[in-house]
Image (tube, rainbow, N blue to C red; front, side, top):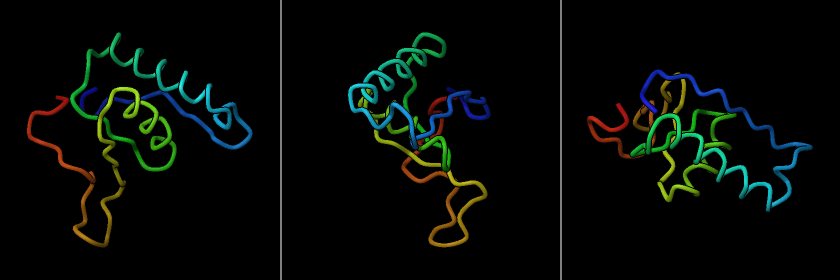
Length: 93
């Protein structure tokens, strides 16, 4: 997935099947498979603040990636990063 692409997956945790571990594993597998089929295999996974973290964790675990996180707007503390985690030039473009 390239920068600027919209991701249409939204997973709510409360009162959902995500409280059932086998469904969690199946969800991660399905999300990872969908990404690989539609966008090829990415070289990093970034979970967008709030709703994207849940899906990002599932996909990163299934694809054996570190999860990067994105804060919007950039944090006003620490280093003020927009993306937490090491991202090298040219990744997922």
